[in-house]
Image (spheres, rainbow, N blue to C red):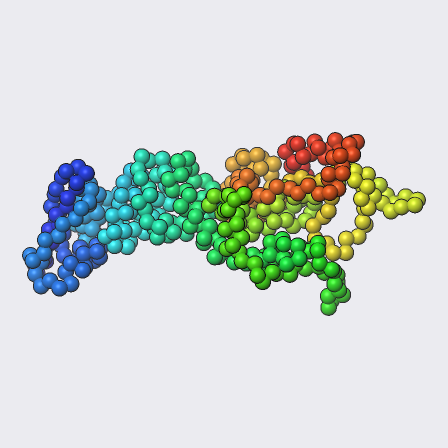
Length: 379
């Protein structure tokens, strides 16, 4: 049985070239759905005159691809140099499977593509959103895009996805204004709420969610002056706020965004003495032998937390990854150290720390040295 064959006239204004391409009608309609409307009210193929404005080489690639699906030839290969043009044209021509293949190729070769002398701004927002869904946080961090052709739009889309997805669990305490998730609120102590005795006879001082707080407004505030964070910086700040790790230096759980908030006393406590309780000589604070509320340890100085099971070499940028689970504590810690500049909030200067630095002495010299150095103390 004879199969209708369609002639497509392609005009390439950029190269001032015209060329005719031929394709069987069933193949064309099955794999280039853009042309369906052309044949909806036509009884004879010869009645149609189809013209397309496109790069000749790109359309030839697309026709070869369609023919390969019909068993007529080998499928052409995507390359770094042509994948973006193929993606844009296949998206316009509604070639669903090819669009998905192109998106996956761009994701896998994003750093190379970003270095190509091509305009990536013509990729649609919908396509960018779909590709951003395929990027894991570690893949985004590894993306090299010095001219900002692709990364800013990917981060923008990934940020919206993060805010409406995992970050929807974020709450702000009405008492102390700290951000927390349900998991974080289970171990954190609110420093501004009156402790109560719960039904099990234990003291607790839990965060209370501020029902008027809106996470989207919070993210918007990160991007406004004076913070003025870009999409990349805001993404990592929100991401770090959601990650929970355990410090092997202080033994406490901590939010990744507060990497530099490991509180400690630089001098050992002095035991109970006549006329007074045990104290820390660095700041003269009382040394409590029992912490009935638990939560974060308190000290007069700050250093960086040391994530449990994490190595010093990894923190200094050595590649010790062996694949594995991206949600593991070690993988999260490795990624955190790679993006710490954007993800982490600076350590607060406590009133006690200020007094120590003003007073001078051995404790002050030690605390200055710790703050001036790397801040990392490995067990």
